[in-house]
Image (tube, rainbow, N blue to C red; front, side, top):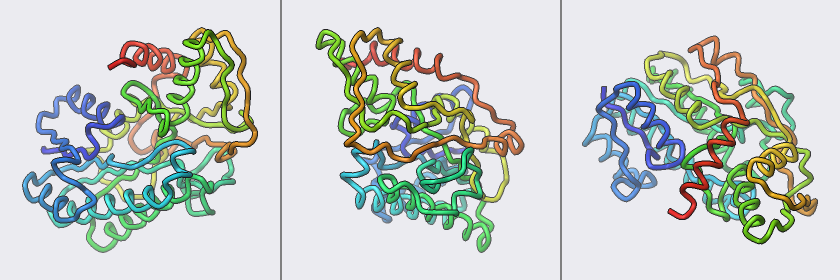
Length: 307
C-alpha cells in the first residue's frame, strides 16, 4: 500500500509520518511543495501520475492564528480551496482507493451550541476572523460528498479541534494560541519576568488535541470504508484562554502578571466537540491530557527553540 501525505513536512504531517512508521507502513511518500506545488494542477496531476498512491492523507494547508487570518483572508481561502480541489480531483482520476482529509473546527458556526455536533457545521456562518479558511474547508466537504455520490469516491473527513505539540509553528506572526502563549511567556522571562499581554478578554474557550492523538485518529481511518460525512476528533473538554494561560505560565515559571487587551478580538466564543461519533465508528479516544501535553510541548520548545 502506497500512502501519499500532503503537507508531510508540516506540524501535523511529521506526527502522521511517525505514526505510519510505527504501524510498519513502508511505502510512504511526502513530497515538499518545492517538488510539487499543489496550487498548480499540472504539478499536482504529475505527482499522482508518477506515484499512483493507494491512500491519500491530505494535510497541506495555509493557516495561522487570529492575527494571521485577519491579515490574509484571501490567501487563506484561495490556497486551501485550490489545493484541496486539485488533490481530490487528481486522486479520483488516478484511482486512489481512500482519501482522508483534515477539516477544521473553524468551519463550525460562530454561535454553535456546545458541544459541536457534526450536523451543526451547516447551521450558520463561521466566526468572522476564521471564515475564509473555514468556508474553504466546508466547500471541500461538499466536494467529497458529491464525489461519493457520483463516483463512489471513498473518503473520510476528520474535523480536528485545536492542535498543539512538538513541531508546532512557533513563528510570532502566524502561530496558534498555545505556541503563541509559550513565546510570550518565554520572552517575558528573558525580560526579567515582564508582564504578558494577551489578546481579548480571556473568557473564550477552546478544546485542544495533542498532535500525536490526531495522527493516531487519521491513521485509524485508512482501512475504513465510509461516506465523507465529517467526524469530530478531539478530547470533548474545553478550557478558557485565561485558564490555559495560567497553566502555561505555571509550567514555564513566569513570575509577572497576565494583562488582557480587550481591544483585540476573542474569536469564536466557545469551542468544544462532541466526539462520540469517532468512538462509535473507529473506536478512537484521545489518550494525552492537556497538562501532560503542555509539559511535553514546552519541554520540546525549550530543547529546540534555537534550532
